[in-house]
Image (cartoon, rainbow, N blue to C red; front, side, top):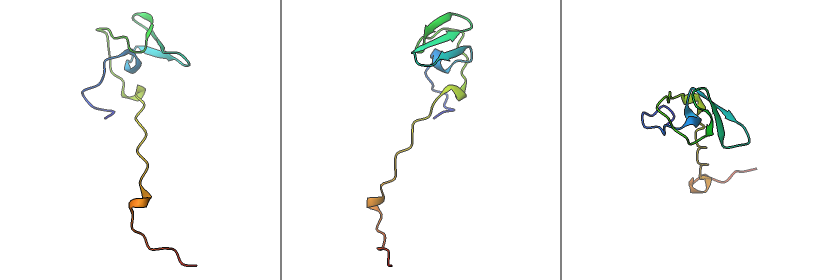
Length: 70
């Protein structure tokens, strides 16, 4: 979940990091230029940095609906 207590402590989700779009790097206010999966002890979680996974599309074939009449 996005507000889960069990999050990966990586710079991509940190308050101190600013992502560089188009790359896998982050500019950290504490460490400078680092990889997005880098971690340090100054980590401060920001839930707005996480991108939630897309929900699965519903399976309409499984529904038993009557046919439409014209």
